[in-house]
Image 1 (tube, rainbow, N blue to C red):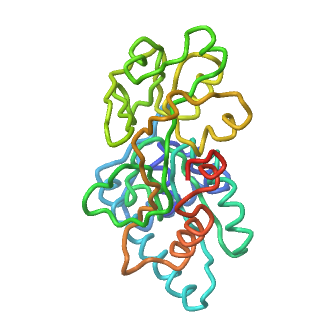
Image 2 (image 1 turned 180 degrees about the vertical axis):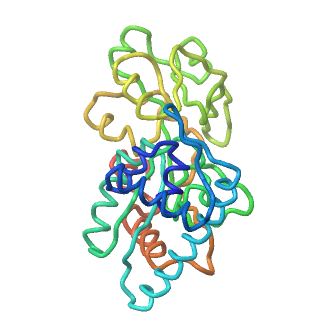
Length: 298
């Protein structure tokens, strides 16, 4: 069932085998065994692609649920021991994952040697049920109603640019000046409108530029290369600001703050490893994270 679900989600027998650390031939044998047990073919196989049969579509949902029940059973048994262990599957944005979560995950599995973490980096809202995610780390001003979440820390942003860009194009002195600059934007955060706050007043500035992306890391690198002004999270650009590679723009104006949340499926059946991981992140980052304290923002 695990092989079948991986193949269905990845659309490739080879990719599923690699993800499960087995040979393609072994994965093929597992699929054949599942089909023999079910008495039905679950996949159409052609030279170009794999697709679900009608029986496979029915079986996929059931297999996901059966695997989830198995995971819950293992979690219940290991929880009784009082020490987190087992596999934790989590997702977060690429920028947060590469800049901070990689180190956090490394320290977490060092603290709990029986734990294993599977990380999915995705700059989109992942469906926790369909992709069997235990924890989704999301950055948002407010979460959708109905989601179960724990706040981990704050996410502040700053306007910044490379010294070379400001030398060539000038330094903005008020928010309205941004309209004459090349502003590099994120697809999902301030795509065309930046809100800046000062002394209880808000300036909403329409912005545009030559580069837009769904990943903050790409925007930060383009800003560092002198392409324009970016609205970027401090967790990502704090080292560049301290090194002088970037300079804050309009430092007296504060962009909207967001929160970093750990989203999960159920409070009633929260595995010990999920609770331990969220506790670990809250302890590690704190409400005023180190990168903001280093910039004097906390």
